[in-house]
Image 1 (cartoon, rainbow, N blue to C red):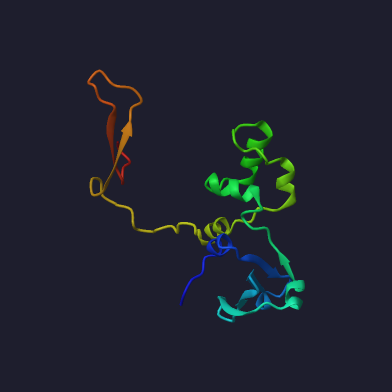
Image 2 (cartoon, rainbow, N blue to C red):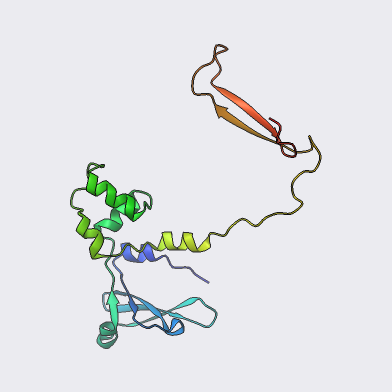
Amino acid sequence: MNLIRQRLLEQTGWKPSYSDIDNELLRCKYFDKDGFRLEFTKKADGFYWLKASPLLETTMMDARTVETLKDNLVMKWHLKLTHLKVDAMKKMVQDGLADGMGGITTDDFKKTSLKCMACEEAKAKRMAFKRQIGKRATECGTRRMSDVCYVGIQTPGRVKYFQLIQDETSRYK
């Protein structure tokens, strides 16, 4: 099985679009370039499978086009600012907190909704930590945790860091 990255397709000139169908089983995603179309159809196993075919004019009318990375300044800055939230980017633009973000206005955020595939996938894959019953130590001194911490200033003994050791059972430090 081969995996295809949407970002690489967009960077190499493929234009994304998708079918406007409410039925999840019939949903398709398309990438068009130079008269060719890559069609990803959803199968019963839940995965999207690739089907390459020549581009047909009638199918292009059924699909809605999506702005590419070259056209969308908001998406460019979202990626440059390591996937920063839209609200934080709006505040930066409104208050003029960052130099060099020229060309972006608050209207740009209203034109297109920011849908970053990487952010969506990261949110979808995150799972809550399950409670582990019986994994914690029950006797004092059997398991300890340690961390090196910065003091903030240099102490009279010329030390900047200290080691914190904590017993897991009693929480004694």
